[in-house]
Image: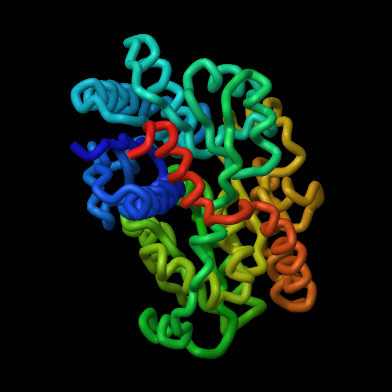
Amino acid sequence: MPKLAYIVTGEPSGDILASRLMQSLRLQAPGVRFAGMGGETMAALGFESLFDISEISVMGFREVLPKLPLILKRLRQVVADIERRQPDVIVTVDSWGFASALLKRLRQKKVAIPKVCYVAPQVWAWKKGRARTAAKLLDRMMALWPHEPQLFEKYGLRCDFVGHPVIENTAHLTDDLAAFKRRHGIPPGGALLCVLPGSRSHEVEKLAPVFRKAVERLSERLPNLFAVIPSVAALAGEVRCAFAGMTTPHCVVEGQRERYNAFRASSFAIAASGTVTLELTACGTPHLIAYTFGAVTNFLADKLVTSKYANLINILADEFIIPEFTLARCRYELIYQKALELMQRPALAQEQVAQAQQRLALLKPAGMLPSEKAAAVVLEVMGGF
């Protein structure tokens, strides 16, 4: 019987990453089967998830607590499914909080199935002890950043730099942007602003009101402004409600293809912090990032996070290329002021893009695409095909 890869991811960015891995595995090992938990992008490839991952897609100390009973229930469900199916490999994709809890349960139950983590936890930013923990729980690690392997290999865990998927996600974008605008009723002239309040429900809850106020202030100075708001299907209704009645003309678009069209068509973007900054950079879209939790989590994050930067491009550059408005500085008036400055000074905005794209090039592995290299590692751990 063809080998079974059990893939576990708990958020939309991991869903996209895992879908690329699935495609590359199918090319390198035709007939490979998949099971586990994933999202809408994986579902489009025929993946049947145990449950909707939006149920457990949360971040932050206080934010997790209300969903903890459900998360624990889903954790037990995944463990039971793995024990029943006995896959040839378990691949956790991002979502280290859920993944580490799963791996600990499997270790307690002495489940002797090879385990691979795709997307190393960012131990260089906070919780350095996770590197030692990962070495006890995993057989292999796959890192998106070139400086990460050494952080895990010193504890005896083999770690491969496979490169960042944004390199290939945005490599062949050729859609007609005029047609994109017509599809969504976006005027052909004027400034188009991309607004990205996050891919998790609690992010939309916290960031959408801040972003909405910033956009409405911007439209007072830029009267022809139109806002396009990409969203994942599971959150689109919530996003529409959050921006309903906004005085600035706007539309909500769904799906990865339309998301990237929105990036390419926009002259500027206001985005939640995360992988989206790499996608925007790859699409040549100047932007700023913002992020906040509740008051308690903000306080704890300010004390525990050791990284100087929140933005991934800034981390690569070790300087502020992309403006950041995080925790207590996530205020609409600050976001509005910086966005207006960059939208009114296009040369400065394009200089940001040029510098960011230089750093993005560091995330490409030699010789193959990131998903191809990741698939090769998974197949090696499975013992071939």
